[in-house]
Amino acid sequence: MERIRINQHVSYSRIVQGFWRLNEWGFSNQQLNDFLHELVDRGITTMDHADIYGQYTCESLFGDALALTPNLREKIEIVTKCGIILPNDSHPHFTGHRYDQSYEHIIQSVDQSLLNLKTDYIDTLLIHRPSPLMDPEEVTRAVMDLVNEGKIRAFGVSNFKCNQYELLNESLKKEKSHISVNQVEVSPLQLENIEDCTLNRMLQHDVKVMAWSPLAGGKIFDKEDEKAQQVLSVIQPLATKYQVSVGTVIYSWLLRLPSKVMPIVGSSKLDRVDEAIAATKLQLTDQEWFDIYVASRGTDIL
Ligand SMILES: NC(=O)c1ccc[n+]([C@@H]2O[C@H](COP(=O)([O-])OP(=O)(O)OC[C@H]3O[C@@H](n4cnc5c(N)ncnc54)[C@H](OP(=O)(O)O)[C@@H]3O)[C@@H](O)[C@H]2O)c1
Image (cartoon, rainbow, N blue to C red; front, top):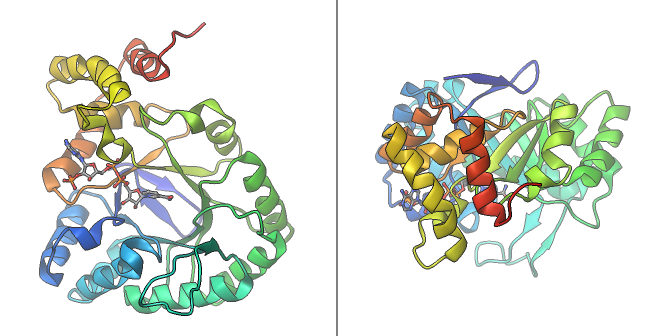
């Protein structure tokens, strides 16, 4: 499995596993531990989390499974996120749904993630979504303290557009730091980050890109969704031609992007994880890539 260098301390596997839906998988601690070993055996070592996943439960489920094999931690990279407040029963002091990217919240959130994940460091902390109230200098101060205390080894953002990225990155640069990763939504049903400045700017600045919901959260398989059906009518014949799954064609389409996108697999099923891995060996022609792109746009290129 290809590795992508994030900074001098951290590298990721080209295919990343996501844990947003972990609380729905019904895994025991042992089953999740087995799943993690299967991933590592396949070369998938990078695990994507957020504090809020599963109403703040997924990190703890993961930490409990990780603790069953103490040396597993050093074989994986943990990415987690902070900056969204979700009111729920376990957090009665969160009175409303909002963003919080204050110094205090970032530090508290990371300390809680470390406890949940049963680890003493996070490989990469991401700010989950850009906030209109974000003070870049305050975020920078929190990031620098977390780095200096050894609690995080790299820093990034998620769902940031070019101007939001630049605002925060300029502040970090004053402290000789920078944004290393931007995690954004990209799929054949979601072209926005390909068509606006986002992916190009990340490539220009050597910021690594993770793609969330690479299969559009499963919507690509929705028989009632007109756009999905339109795109599938192009992908299905390619899957037949190359004797792979539809999923493999989609992952291959993502891997073809010049910014070396790292797709985040959302499934707990190993055969679907293997569909993503198979894509690392499938090269679509440029024409095939554009046929999928045009099917998604709904209009031909000029
Ligand atoms: N930064 C952000 O704002 C953000 C937002 C969303 C997600 N994420 C990250 O991205 C990861 C992946 O997102 P995602 O879960 O939306 O990924 P996805 O791969 O686009 O969607 C996964 C869903 O598709 C279904 N699926 C996969 N293959 C299928 C098939 N052949 N037929 C029918 N259904 C199929 C899966 O069902 P099964 O489980 O049954 O396979 C699952 O429900 C998350 O875990 C999270 O780590 C980040």
